[in-house]
Amino acid sequence: MGSHATLTVATPERMGRLGRELAALLRPGDLVLLSGELGAGKTTLTRGLGEGLGVRGAVTSPTFVIARVHPSLVGGPALVHVDAYRLGGDLDEMEDLDLDVSLPESVVVVEWGEGKVERLSEDRLEVRIERAIGDDAGEDHDPRRVVLTGIGRRWDDVQLGALA
Image (tube, rainbow, N blue to C red; front, side, top):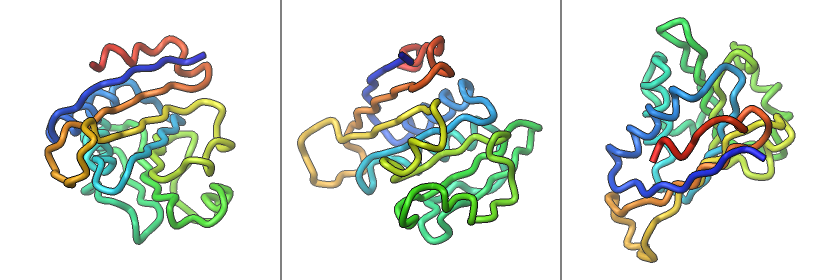
């Protein structure tokens, strides 16, 4: 069944904080699927996740490298940040990326992964970021609606609503 929460996130700072709070719930082997239009705040959220996990390196959009590994500085899981937009098929290609990291020991965050990563794991956290107002002026500070859906047994007992 999993768990579910919808939050309103007013500012980029709050989005980063949500990432840090989310990091506290994540464990090695977790798969996080991020979706949302360009500029919705996916990278800001992932940056917060990286800070929360205590990983090395600046988290930026991995567009040109497809995947970037951020090793932990605190003995925790590495953060593997994947941009599936450029992966043609599905994440079978992940194996070919030759990431110097064990995915079961890492937290894997995938942007643009809908339809590509579902087979990778029965358990995943889906994070959908939407503009909260029907205004596509593209303002950086429009509130966002963040829909968190935990799928699979891993998320059954996780209180995502506590993040609100």
